[in-house]
Image (cartoon, rainbow, N blue to C red; front, side, top):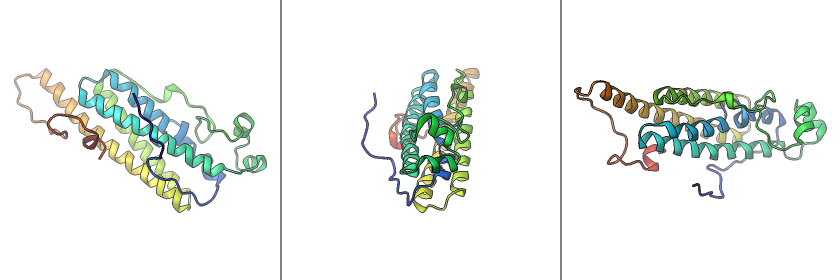
Length: 212
């Protein structure tokens, strides 16, 4: 069960509408490395994780990605606010306007709709977490590309925040990958003494341990 809090994870302060950057930014809404893909990937993969730590991590990060999706939606909405049909057409958003007016829709920067083929659930915990690490690194790179495409200070601030959260998520996934590998090694070699770095407090998962 989720409890919705009526505020963004970070305030969005955009100085002016900008259809050009809105066209590019939408890729983090419905593109292959966007926030929808991340949220659905993690919240689905958690069911096949072998321990509570991994399940809790995927639940927490997947939930945070839903908050990031809301931030992207808010940014795109503000960037397109007040635009005329002609302005949309001139910005390369004529096709979007024809199908959706200025409504948000899950597409990438080229207008391709979101597809489940963007995500994976292999059922192998190590394979899935390695995919998650790659997904976070690709999202980090995309946010840097978007930062390079704008000079709006408020937009840059929000994009930098999202970029840094991808870095944190990648690190958390690397930590749980280490734990999963150690557990797998212990099952294969039960007589071997293994030392596992435990990032949790008293072996219990708390939000601060995972998403500091």
